[in-house]
Length: 319
Image (cartoon, rainbow, N blue to C red; front, side, top):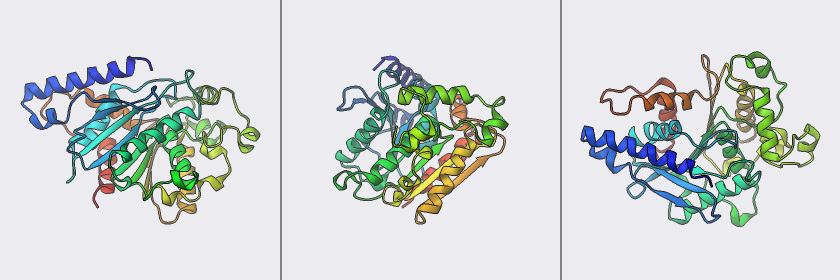
C-alpha cells in the first residue's frame, strides 16, 4: 500500500492532538492516538479514530474515492466529529479501512478486505450488534457489496446476528449512466458520466455491458446491475439502513432505487432514505473538510448534514 494514507492519518492525528493540547482537552487527547493495524492480507489497514480500548460501540468506515483515490483528512474529521466527539451515552471508536486501490487490485479484492476487517473486529470480541458499517460514494458501494456478500455466503461465513446498522452516503451502485439524475445533474455535480465509467473500468478492469453484468460478470460489484434476488435476505445482516443522496447529484437515483428496493424486499429492516434538496455529491464529506477549518476553535456548531447523519447513526447505538 502507498504510504500516503498512513501519512494523511498521522498528519491529521498530530494536528488534532496539537489543538487538544493547546486547549487542555484531555478527553479529546484520550481519543486521539496513532493506531494503525495491518490486516492479515498484508495490503490493507485499519486506521483508528477514537479510543478503541474504552469503546463499547464501533463504526467500520469505508472511505470513498472511486477505488482510485485514498482516504482524506475530511474523512477522518467526519468520523471524529460525527461518531467519536458527539457521543450519546456510549464511547464510540471508528476503524477506517484503507483498502487496496485500483489498478493495484480490482474487484473482489476490496470486498475480501472489507470482509476481513469486519471479521477482525468480531474476532477481537466485538459483537456484530455493536458495529455499524458504512461509507461514502465508492465506500457506499463497498458497504452494499459487503451486506450482500454476508447475506449470501455459505453458512459458516454468515453473521451470528445482524449488525446494528449500515449507512451509504451518495452511493455508487450501478454502471448505468443513462438515468434521469445524470441528465439533470451532469453539469452541476462534481461527478459526471465519465467519472462513473472510468471507475467501473478500473474496478472491473473493463467497461461491462448490462448483459455482462446480468450474466454474472462482476457479480455484486455494482449491486443494481445484477439480479435483484441478491438484495433479498439482508435482514440477517443489518437491522437498519440509512441512505443519503443529494438532489443535485448524478448518483441520486441509484441511492433512491437501492433504498426503495431494500425496503420492499426486506420488510424488517428499518430503512431511512434522506434526499438533501440543496446538495450535490457527498455533502457529508464536504462538511467534514469544512470542519477541518474549525480545529482549535472552542466554539463550533456541527454542520447540518453531519449533525443529521450523527443523530441517525447514534440511534443505532441506543439499545
